[in-house]
Amino acid sequence: MDKSKSTNDQFALTVSTARKSFGKVEVLKGVDLSIIEGERVALMGPSGSGKSTLLNCISGIEKLDSGEIILDGKNLDRLDLVGIEKMRRESIGYIFQSFHLLPTLTAYENIELPAQLIDIPDKERKDKVDQLLESVGLSNRSNHKPDQLSGGERQRVAIARALIHKPSLVLADEPTGSLDSKNGEAILTLLEDLSNDHKVALLLVTHDRTSTRICDRVISIQDGKLV
Image 1 (tube, rainbow, N blue to C red):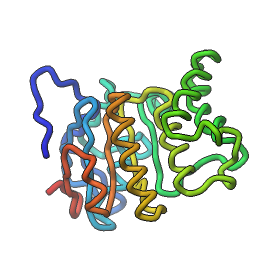
Image 2: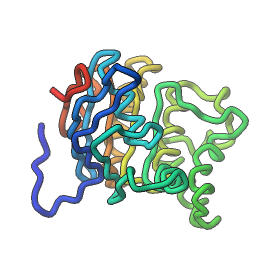
Image 3: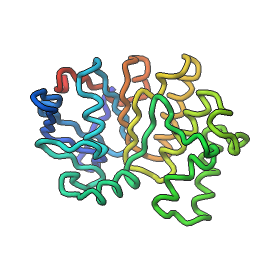
């Protein structure tokens, strides 16, 4: 179901006529995409369709050849490397298929890290971590390191980490891809609930049609174009 947009909607992300090539291969061919605050959008497409390149451009890892990306009111093309890094730390949360937790840190410390990087005060940071641990059902696992947690628990830590700094956009790249169906379903429900609670926009990249049930819109990319 599409979420209707009114004139009062604020956009968390706007991508306009985005083009990106690697050598002679044009990967993005004029992509236009807008996501409003709090909206959940699923992006589907086969391997090689441009999904990863689009995510990399949105996060500032790759630079567009032409077009523009406006994230949280900032035009990425006008930011220097320091500005892009600051934008990534403050405005984007990441959730990956393979979790990407730091193995030497506890669940608590993994969640806390993004808040430390943007200098959230100690008391506020502790309160946020404790609140998120409770929200994802891991208050009793806070001192466990990733290798002491199940796959589902690790992804719950990753979701909490993605939300700790109150980003305007969360990029979720196949977040249930490493999980069995039961844990995958639980993670999707958790993502839906927390994105509602925190009013955060979500761009969910997935191959699994069932994962799109939590999204307001489903869009497809093929050969570098949204279809």
